[in-house]
Structure formats: structure tokens, C-alpha cells
Length: 144
Ligand code: FES
Image 1 (cartoon, rainbow, N blue to C red):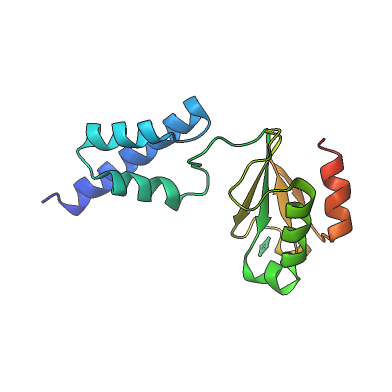
Image 2 (cartoon, rainbow, N blue to C red):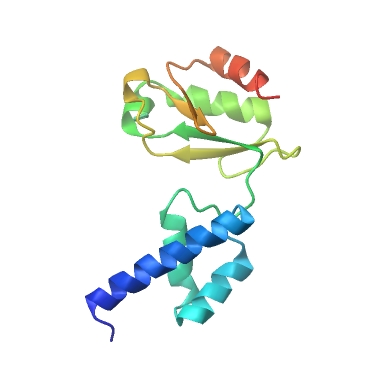
């Protein structure tokens, strides 16, 4: 049995390899999950768990623009459900999906640091706060 120090080293090595894989492919393909598990002598489920624990390690290709709508409590209390529905309606996709044209992916994420402007979302690296369904429509139009 590995010591906790060895476990920590293995965890950090695995995360570095997963991050490097994401840089190469833009996401973590299934063959890479299996290859990393094989190379490191880990169960595939452990590699999968490490990859899915971190929001920045997608398991599917993303669209050109990634929309991240905050699902945390402060945004929930400011009715983020209407924002999520507006994005879904505009793009015809749900969380975890990519639009047919490959332009947008939608994710629900924890706090993005704009709680004072809840409800909030990010498109790529840009933060949008004090959202309404109408504003979502306007914002998305600017990315088309
Ligand atoms: S809780 Fe939504 S941005 Fe912080």
C-alpha cells in the first residue's frame, strides 16, 4: 500500500498529466483516460474521478465559446433558473451539451466570483452579472 506522501505525489502527477492532455486535445478523450490509468497502474475510475472533480477538465470537446452559468446559492436566490432557461432556449442545448454548430457549450458551475452581481455567468473569460433573460439574449447575439 502506498503512503499518503506517495498518494499525494501520484495525485499531483495525475493532475499534471490530465492538464497536459487537455492542452493537447482541448478535452480529456476516453482513450487518454484509459491510457493514463494503464501507464500509472490505476483503476480507470480513479482517473475518471480525478478528471471530473475539476471543472476545467472537460470529457467532451467544447464549443468555440464556453458559457458557464453560476449555480451556487447566491445566484440561485437571485433566480438563476431563469438565466439557465434563457440560455437553453436560445441555444437549444442543456448543461453539458454543445450546440449543433459547435459555437457554444453550456456548463453549470459553482461560484465564479461575481456574487455581488448575481445572477452571473461567464462566456469564455468574460463575466456578465445582474443578468435577466432579456440580457442573455442580447449577450448571446453578440457572440454569433
Ligand atoms: S454565487 Fe454566483 S457568482 Fe458567486
